[in-house]
Length: 297
Ligand code: ADP
Image 1 (cartoon, protein in one colour):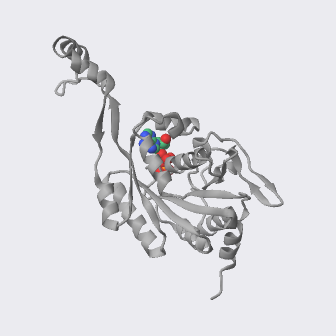
Image 2 (cartoon, rainbow, N blue to C red):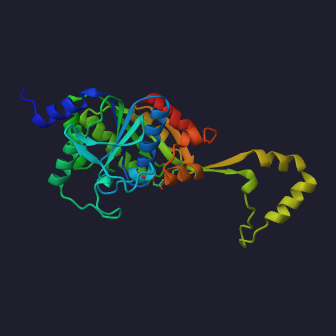
Image 3 (tube, rainbow, N blue to C red):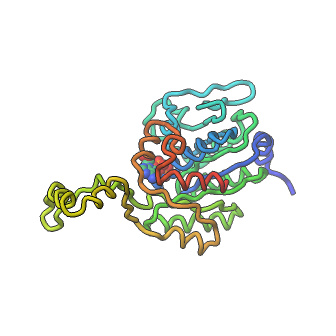
């Protein structure tokens, strides 16, 4: 059978990469780039040599999340050089090539495909343990191209990110069906923004009928009648779940469920400031699933 020259070219370029992992989501805004960036940080923290390729052409958020806005990529005879965050973490994103940060890229299919192919063939990663690819949301032409171009490489599989709402999961089912159809292995489903964790000490007591803030009087009662409870409140968090669907969905598709990441202001902060979350906030309830994701890839 004749091999597509583009497929052979990609295979040749990525022959120095041991593992390729795609990060997918059904919808935008569910935390796909967050998971991609933090996965890359976490793997690099384990001493792995990691590349992060952001092919979310219409909304490249990786440069911001890694604190790399305004950086430019350079081209040499061996290809485009990634921007290195550390010695062990290199990044390539369409975001580096846009003349202005807020330039929306509205390109048609063939041009997008050309760019994706270039991203896969022209970046000089050197030796990598992992190449993490942050893809656009949904199952678009870009996904078909990526899977096609990677046809000659060993792809470990896809990490699929979703939020627990039914509207998001409906699109993830399409994503999982896409994986089935194209033979792309699913490493697992990650539920992001699964709920809200709040330190009990920061809870406000609000009158349901009037909206009046009763925190002061509630605390006064607790101080007098239940000081031990007040003490316990200082040391605990409460969790309120936004839904529990993704675990069951993963089960019904026969793919692993990798865990739930709650809404976490520290994770948001890490993303805004381009920092590695799990190393900075190891104690956070949102950190655990990342460790599991790293174990799965
Ligand atoms: P996507 O790549 O799916 O479009 P992003 O990763 O860009 O989504 O996430 C959207 C926004 O939500 C970002 O500002 C990110 O920092 C924030 N975010 C993602 N996950 C969480 C979380 N678990 N807790 C708090 N903020 C989060």
